Length: 124
Image 1 (cartoon, rainbow, N blue to C red):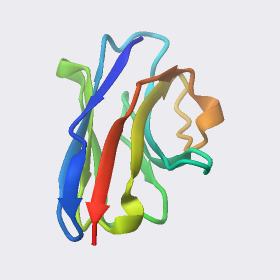
Image 2 (tube, helix red, strand yellow; image 1 turned 30 degrees about the vertical axis):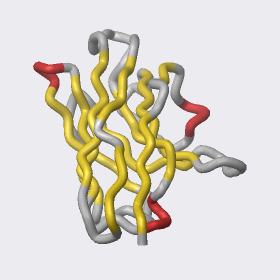
Image 3 (cartoon, helix red, strand yellow; image 1 turned 45 degrees about the vertical axis):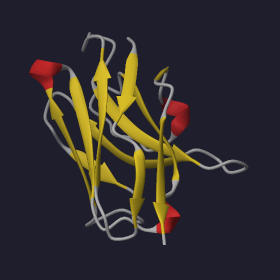
């Protein structure tokens, strides 16, 4: 499974961005897709994840109420709508995928397939 992120960029605090994660295919090997972010020198942080089969979602406390994850299974694409962005949201954002048998995880150790990332910079 190949994943390609897009939609990153520079935005002012309070603004919005929508990230996309396009998968080459949704196969038997994938039933969960997640977004992570990382800044240099820090561990990769789980932001949100979604079950492809039933659409249930999970969010990190730091983004609840501001970020929304969704999927378009017909397009093999998962989106991350990010509103009310803060400077501390600045990071390289990655999408990841794996088969978790219905379990949703924000731990990077649970995911086998990764995209290369897209940079999000929020200016104050």
